[in-house]
Image (cartoon, rainbow, N blue to C red; front, side, top):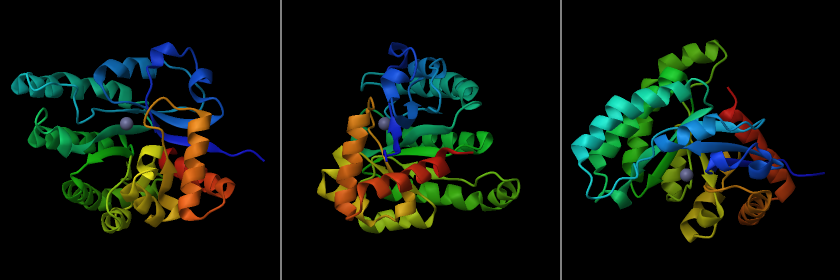
Amino acid sequence: MHMHLTDAHCHANFSRFADGEGLAAGLRVCADACFSGDWEGLRDFNAFGVKKAYGIHPDLRISEFDDLDFVEREIYERFLPEVQQYLISADAIGETGLDANITARVPMDLQRKVFSEQLKLADKFNLPVIVHCVGAWGETFSTLANWVKSGENAAKDRILRGEKGRCFLLHAARCSVEMAKEFEKIGGYFSFGLRELNSPKGAACAAAVSEDKLMVESDAETSHEKISETVEVLAKIRDRDALELSEKIYLNFNNFYGK
Ligand SMILES: [Zn+2]
């Protein structure tokens, strides 16, 4: 029996791939274009079964020399309107979130605005959110908790219509176990790559979250080898059979990205 392998979060220069074969042979993946220059390439990338996410990364690819007023205007006047033409056919929005390591270049206040605008777009297009968080776990939690809570009534209507409520994936999860439990209470999913699993904090987090919220990722150009190794490492951490675990992760992937 072969493993069902999934990559919950990968990136690539899609213009280099004529189809999905070179990128994701034998895998189900969600490919993420989170800078405006990458959106079109992902949309034009034809591969059966590849889920697509578009968004605005907190990094914004700006330097400390950029004029922040200009950047903010560009975001509101250009990028937030433009990304919506991609979100119409998307499977998720993101990655978006908060990154405490880059505040010298991208002030936290600007990151907050861009994050909350994308949560509004998640509602508008009824999409799950891929969340990037580095070192700002408390604020990311409270932002998402408010978002989930304020959507509870709308979520009931959606569920009655057979749609999903507000849901999110913490990618590259390596928060404390206590924090992970809090994210879990508000419906969060978690994905882990080798980078997280090889760090004590990430491994502790990966051992603690419940199995039906668990996914794996490359956060880079994906491959069959990379993902099977990730599943093997995760299975060891959780003391599980790798094949069984990969089946469970496959179900979680479909639950999260399926509409
Ligand atoms: Zn990423």
